[in-house]
Structure formats: C-alpha cells, structure tokens
Amino acid sequence: MIERLLPSGVVAVEAFGDDPGDEAFPGEEDLIANAVVPRRREFITARRCARDALAVLGHPPAPVRPGPGRAPIWPAGVVGSITHCAGYRAAAVSGRAGPASIGIDAEPHAPLPPGVLDSIVAGADAARLAALARAEPSIRWDRLLFSAKESIYKAWYPVTGRWLGFEDASVSIEASSASFTGHLLVPGHRHDGGAALTTLRGRYLIDRGLVVTAVVVPV
Image: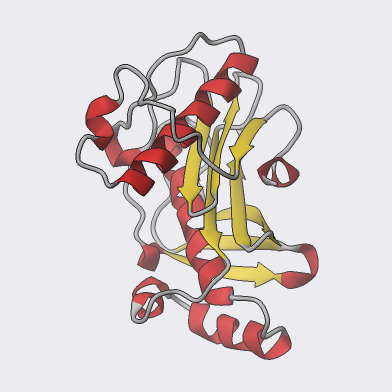
C-alpha cells in the first residue's frame, strides 16, 4: 500500500501481521522492555520492515534506535520513516539521491477517540473537515487529518530539528486527487540549507480498513 504513495527510488516494505516467534533485534530490546505483547509485536515487525528496506539499499542488519524527536536514527546518507498500527506495519527509506526527508503514517479507518479531534485542529481544519464530511460521509476525515499531521511531523523534524505540534500546521485535503497540503503556522527554517518550509504536500490512501499517508520533502 505505502509504495503507491511514494516516488520511485524510495524503498518501502510493509506487513499486515506479525510472526509471534520473532524476537527483538539485538540493540533494540530495551526499547520495548516494558511494552505489552501487541505493542512488542508491532514494534518488532516494523523494525524488521525497516531492516529489509535498508538491505535493498545495501546496508547490513543493525538496530534502528530512536533519536531526538522520536525520529529513527538511520545510517549515514539515508532518510526514512516507520509506522505501525493495528493490522499494519511499514517502513520507507531512500538513499543520497532521494528526497530530503520522508514521513509515513498508518491508522485504522475509524473515528478518533472522543476528545482527540479538538486537540489536533488548527486554523481552518474544523471547517474543512465539516465540508468534506458533508460531501463524503463514509470517510473518517478526522482520522485522515490526524494521520496527515503525523506524516507531516515525521517529514518536518529531520530537516528542521524542531518539534511541530498539531496546532502548528493546518491541513487542506483534496479528495479528488487523494492529496493534502500542510500549511505551516510556524517558521520552517531548515538546518540542511534547503528553502524554508511553508507547506508540506502529501498523499493518502484508504484501503483494507486503513488510512495511510505519506509526505516527502524535496531536496
């Protein structure tokens, strides 16, 4: 699924279930030492997806540990993103000739828990969601908004090194093209020398009971 949202040259690996016999990779055990069993299995499978994707780029198996801002620490010259939710795990990576950063996210295609929507809307988000819901009530636009903002953050952090809250970006969703644009409400200065970010563009897919989003920041 996720590869349908990403440009050529980005390697994506996904899984829709776990092998109960899989153990945590050496160097990652402490990251899930206190996690419940479902969370452990999601994590182990998602990290395996990441290593499988890195192998395509020629990198040997190694622990993928989180760094500041929760972003995975990738080998030198690699950018990527990892996501997992109930029924889905995925990773996407790219080498030096690829984008400046990648953000992917997957969520169940179901309503957000009560109270969550109020904490994630910014700018014109609420009005846009209401209009989308009137036009196509079968889609959980609130969950799509949440996923889009997660992907936006994952793509934002590696090139800025700064936290981005849900309130720091407003998202417009274009249903006809299955795409979205994150309008940044804070300065988007990049530490990699690229042009400052004012918007981040992404694509989405709703299939198999899932909402999947991806954002790519060009070099």
